Image (cartoon, rainbow, N blue to C red):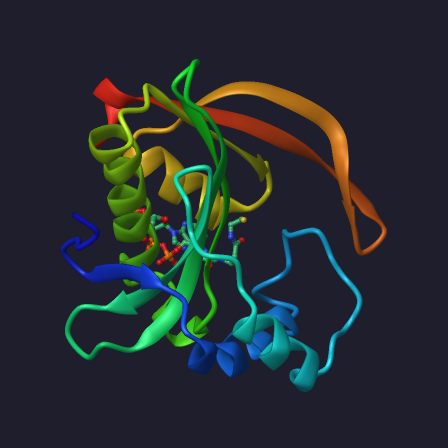
Length: 175
Ligand SMILES: CC(C)(COP(=O)(O)OP(=O)(O)OC[C@H]1O[C@@H](n2cnc3c(N)ncnc32)[C@H](O)[C@@H]1OP(=O)(O)O)[C@@H](O)C(=O)NCCC(=O)NCCS
């Protein structure tokens, strides 16, 4: 269920923490994400030891390549509203930049959305993305997300303001 054409999604392990810590501090990976102050490796290792277990309401999954079993990123789905049949795709990152543009991000999106629709029985998945984050917008569009709204100048980074797009996908629209 959590395996695609290029990636497999799995629970995060404590051993993943060092890579997560490197990605957290990579300005290119975080270019279009909310910035947070630096944290020490020790703090991140502790966080990795005490990670809450995944639930249908809130999960963070590691992204691993199918061929070499390499840990290259993570994806988070949460705020699940079962009565309404909707969850929020909160974050996705291919932290290992050597793997950007190789189809891993879109495959991971496909896998997590298929899981949301087929396993969790949801009707919709939605997300917010900075409009200028071309790679992410393109990856979301590729798997079936469409633009549903725009929060103008709501994201500020490096002294400039950008719009946020709200994108959503119905279960029938996954490609
Ligand atoms: C967004 C992200 C997950 C996409 O993953 P990826 O594996 O690099 O993307 P894919 O290789 O699956 O590409 C998906 C589509 O986007 C396009 N794309 C990828 N990088 C692009 C770029 N820099 N500019 C324009 N299009 C790009 C690809 O060409 C592909 O479209 P196509 O098949 O029609 O050609 C990845 O770039 C990333 O981790 N970025 C940093 C974190 C981030 O911004 N996350 C999203 C916000 S939370």
